Length: 128
Image (cartoon, rainbow, N blue to C red):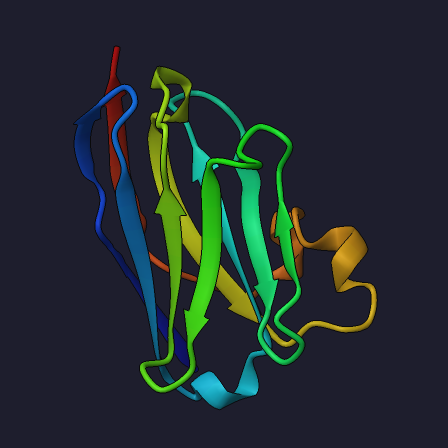
């Protein structure tokens, strides 16, 4: 089993920044892809950013490109999501997810079904 714990959420004003962390434990060596998702109230969960841990390839939703950056710290088994220039529409519960992904990951990273391990989420609230 792989355990994922998110942290770093909070309340900020529009234009502000937050850095989310996703710390992995357990059989964390068995996963090779990590994604960040968000789910606003009464809306579907959407993929925000993802990273293939072995190659370092990163993927972003169009809505966050240029504002969010995903990165990894292999020593700490932690993946970060740096969020800058936050907007009110970024308000959501943010989740990280992980799994062992195949060669099609670049085309499927944004699909929740790709990931078998999920964290409990951290709330991000952006006020305008």
